[in-house]
Image 1 (cartoon, rainbow, N blue to C red):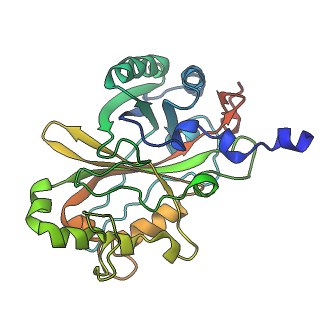
Image 2 (cartoon, rainbow, N blue to C red):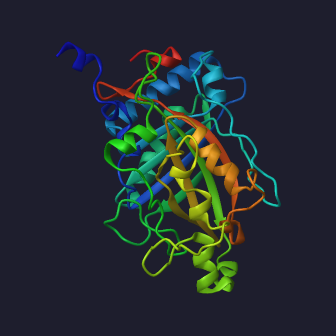
Length: 316
């Protein structure tokens, strides 16, 4: 019994929201560190944010922090790094600065507005809210992952149950690392006019599945997204847990790509292949969509219902 208390199932140590199906509504908050901020101010801000995560039970508020925030605390998170620029072979895959990221999750948009204000107030002494992105679930209201705005099902090959936890969560390591996750985020903007000009057959070949029934196409070209990113075809296998959501802002829209992993290695293997670094073949998705930004973040674990920031030198 003592060993069970010391080593609870790893999924119980995670911020619960990352393992739950995508919500009806989402809101992404993008923060940067205030200039010349003291480490004590960063600690105080994160403690205040931890209170909000505790109230949300880790479900309606998921927190991730970038390398600059960890550095500002004089700490080290093994495995956390800056996303490389994957651009090449005629496509742009940029990396951008992101110091702290919050994913707000809910059944309606209204409560997320109040939650945004609470988060901003908790962090204002150390972080500046630079941008907000609205997201929403599209398509099937029951399925785990919903659909992209193009109509194609998103996250079909997501691991399930224990396999999802294995893919998304750190299983062991230093105190405060077990149960944490590493997340790669990218905002992809669709050109829906270009997508429609492709026509149904070319659309299916770009994705590698039939829109009508989501069946994988045996005769899809080598550039098909499904073939580029088949997780089981990498060595080692490159499984991630996708929790992407469609977004819309004014006249623009697309998919906010979110991939949780026990490291960034699986995402990097997939992204390199999508951008053609392995064999010069670029993913078919680039025919109608492109990433505007991208960043890596560390998603701290939970302990006793509270955010576990011991790895950063912050006690409960």
